[in-house]
Image 1 (tube, rainbow over the protein chains, first blue to last red):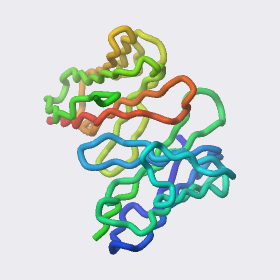
Image 2: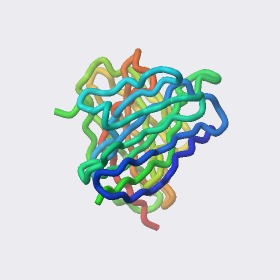
Image 3: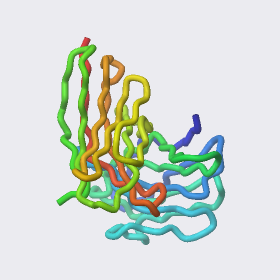
Image 4: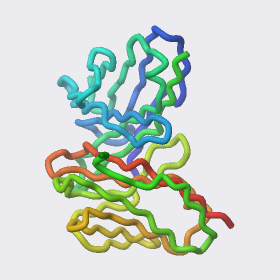
Length: 117
Length: 112
């Protein structure tokens, strides 16, 4: 099946620093990627929709200046958490939509556990 | 009120048991329903995808949708220890392809 690679899998950083998370579709082109966040014992919450070559669309309550999303190619989207604070500590997961073939083809990365000290 | 409600469990069953997982939802605009399996610190993996009310079967898994009651279920027959994971229901509206609303997830443990 299709593979979505997410890197890094775990990152620990100091408060005030920025962290970049990469999401790559390895064997298909993804015109659209999605970024989710999951706090402990809570459901995955959609943060933003990333479209190749255009600005990301953010969900209500998500600060676009804090969570910078870049989707510069059909296989790569990045999420940068700027000036990270302890409350940003969470599990971040990307998903990529494949438009090849028919049906619902949405593939998830393995996630990034961010811990801000 | 959350749009999607799912009992987080944990649920513990013996090997071979039939497992029943459920979600309720409040937004009648949801039209597509999915079940994902998520192992610890891994991304969700799609198990079942349904659109209409009724049953859909795939191997040991059966997904059931009742749109009139806003209730979906996943049944796992002959459960195996390898089925131990978190099961997430997810759903989306007709025009919001890929924008999923997830339940909290149910932690399932199948013990030998």
